[in-house]
Length: 254
Image (tube, rainbow, N blue to C red; front, side):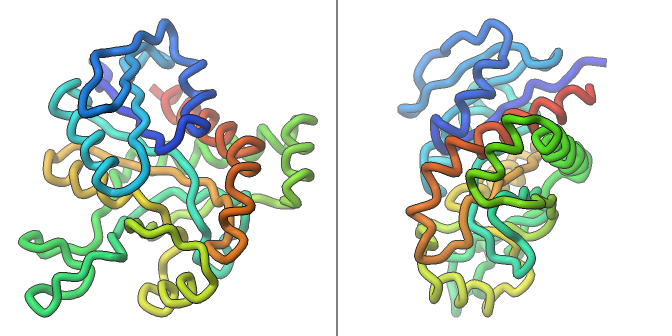
């Protein structure tokens, strides 16, 4: 059975760094759309890694290139997000089961949040790859909790018992870094667990191309006034380790 070529997106270099180090013989590919792509092998899979950049347009451009230019048959996104759900804490991991663009509003022509001419506001992730990422996330937390260096990272960030969640992830071209912004999103979409700036756009592209998609996000902050203060330290200490561990665990399943 031929394994699918997998495209792996990350928004920032720090989120991609450790994962790229694990790729066997990575080689840079021709620049497409001002993005740098790397291709290699990872646990038997032909993979193409890209830094998507920040925001929905940048992410959608990168996703389209992975599919149309590089022939990727599955797309995975790894990165950080702000926590929205009441029980979603810093250091937890959220695997998306649905994705929605919280800043999309074409009303009164279409219902709020609905992508015009699709009849949809929520895009489901691929169930098989979502399950792999969930298992990978659980394995990553167990491994880090059992490791001295991992426990030290948790302690440095004040994280006691990180957990894995699966549910709705929001995306929009606005950094949610204020308590009122987070409160407003919770009021509008009470089942949302996390918010970022890219993932739902990639989900829409994958739906258009009928390509399986799944996403995992580590919670760097509570999408409040402290978000910008926590982000860099969290990414360096934990997010990049989470991202590499979860993706590698998912790919090792075959």
